[in-house]
Length: 177
Ligand SMILES: [Zn+2]
Image (cartoon, rainbow, N blue to C red; front, side, top):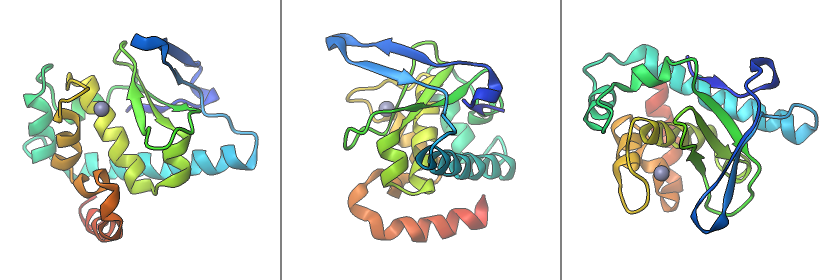
């Protein structure tokens, strides 16, 4: 299973500099301050949602099938159950920056802003979005990664103007995941 990047994993922090000089960090989740503990609790909540989803759905469902249409041609399950993939923390508090995927296709991050300002459903949707990049979905103007969140049942999370439906969708996902 993919793992949350905690100290216990021994994976360590990564950093990557992108075009234009922007650096993104894929850090170990610290576990010292009250804020650290809250963030760990929320990322764990999101992680558990995806675990339940993975257990519930089969390989022919839209989520796994959609991932197979992405460039690497492999199911969502193939990536989710890969224990060499880590979900780390970007300390960025930039409004609207949710997460990113390292070019090594082994590290994704969810931003501190996303964790602090959205609920665990949105965080789960962000993780699925980043896993679509690992599966080969292109970034930038491509909607391939967002479509993955849609096919895995998270689409309304991607429109922050539809906040009202998040709870409703959460209840729906609770029934299937
Ligand atoms: Zn993306």
